[in-house]
Structures are given as C-alpha cells and as structure tokens.
Image 1: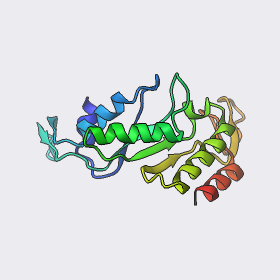
Image 2: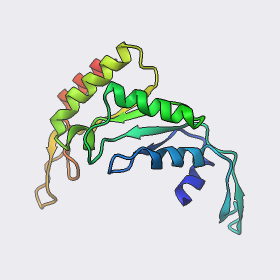
Image 3: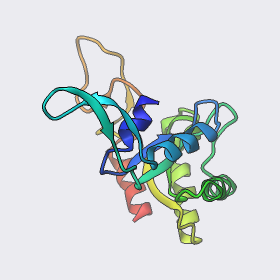
Length: 172
C-alpha cells in the first residue's frame, strides 16, 4: 500500500506487474490506487513528519510478466487485460515483459515474444505501450565469482547485444 500511495505523487510513468501467480487484479488495484489522490504520513521538505497529499499519477500502466499458468503476452491476453482496465475506468496502457514467465525464464525465448508483440502492433494493438527485454552485452548469466566476465549478468539470464539489436530493429 505504501508504494501505491507514493506512486500517486510521482510525475513519471510507472508500471505495476501482474502477480507471479499470473493474477492481473493486484496490478489493476495498484493502478487504481496510484492514479487516485492519496493522503499519507510522510516527511515534508523541511524534514518534519506531516500529512502528504497527492493528486494521483495519471501515467500508470500494467506490465504483463506471465505467471504460474504460463505466458500472458499473446493477443487474447492483451485484449482481455485492456478490457479489464477499461472496465475499471483506467487507461488500457500495457507494457509486456518479454522475459520472466513470458519466456519461461529461457532468455532466448524473448525473441519469439518480441515477434508476437510486433505482430500485435502491426495488427493495430494500440494498447501496447512498451516492452521490457532482459539484455546485456553478453548473453546468458554467471555466478558471482573472483573471475567475473565483463558485460554478463549476475542475476537473470539475458539476451546478448546482437539479439537485443535484432529485437529493437523488429520493434522499430
């Protein structure tokens, strides 16, 4: 709840991912809270505890990350989520995470996810506002050790530069 309240006062686009189990409702509720005016306990510019009031952040969007039931980036998922957002009087703004559950955590599977996103955009899916790609200079990932390879992730496995460039060219 605290993050939703603080998000309501930010003047920048902000995304909320669906739950790891795949549920969309927590993200929709977060967007509803963040786009609404909020008052909460905070710190004033003078460093004094005070009530902070916000106007709500109109620039929130949902991020589809996939979930336990599988990916959620395909056309029917995007249309369904856009309808759910509209039903709650929210902007049907959707970002798709090509990694995580949408790629079954197989970094090379981000490429077909991006291809699907491109096809949706070409076929007039105007609700897709952005794409997240796990990317680094070198593909894959590595464990933390004394001999770290420069330009390779130590967390999630990533696409390398060449595949990232190809994805960006497709999206362009």
